[in-house]
Image (cartoon, rainbow, N blue to C red):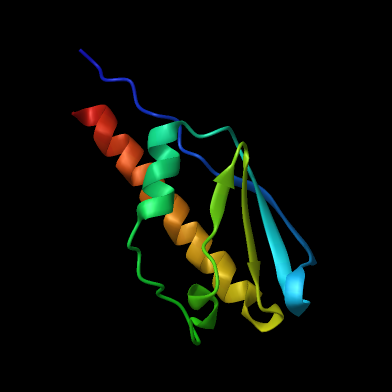
Length: 103
């Protein structure tokens, strides 16, 4: 018997707009609306940032899932690092969703 696997959530597009306090609001459009378990895994992950540079953006606010989007406002000079961090959280949530399908 073959187990059904959860569809992986992917980033379809990222939009950057001026945000509060001179920051940049990043809006990630997702390939589908994640279920509550996926969103919880995304929100509660303890993924450590592994990329170049500092992680000054982590002390401000966290990215959050809203329907088929992830939103986050970060300092202008941190957008590339923030993009990598959000991708790590998405990868973690996908792995957690796949793990829960196996059980």
